Length: 161
Figure 1 (cartoon, rainbow, N blue to C red):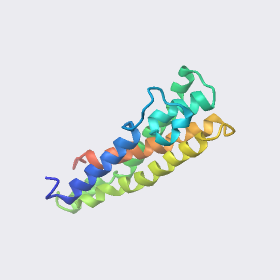
Figure 2 (cartoon, helix red, strand yellow; figure 1 turned 120 degrees about the horizontal axis):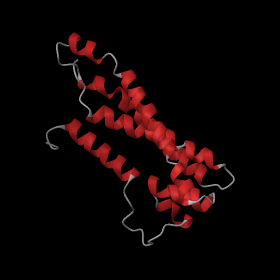
Figure 3 (cartoon, rainbow, N blue to C red; figure 1 turned 90 degrees about the vertical axis):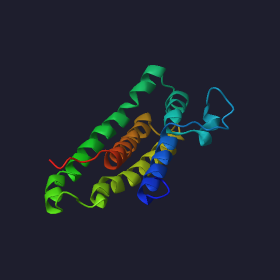
Figure 4 (cartoon, helix red, strand yellow; figure 1 turned 30 degrees about the vertical axis):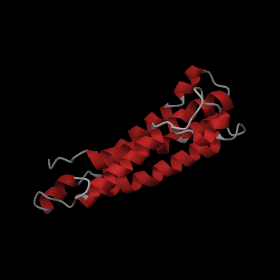
């Protein structure tokens, strides 16, 4: 199917990049415990403890609270996706049951820049101890928005009702 359906190939590549950016760990990472010196080789969730525990001196419990920004971003992203797709039933009626699939990609087009901005924000502000911790934690909001809007847009089939 990947060879015959270009959109499926592109969506698969996007999800691979997204999951890899968020969850994967570098294969050449030779240390069991990441430190700030290894920051160029870290991915998003792996960088949170380094940014907030090592650079800002938080405890493990306090570091866990910094993930609230991701949750807030996911809630906001879900609300945005619901708002953007609010007229889907009308489109189904207008297109006689088969609206163009491109109309479902509007929120995915907004998700890509949100994800890039969020990762850049987290990485840039997390690099400096002089930047307050909450500025870095707020970078999780666009990351959450980008993650959930990508997944909703590209995996959830909209009902015609």
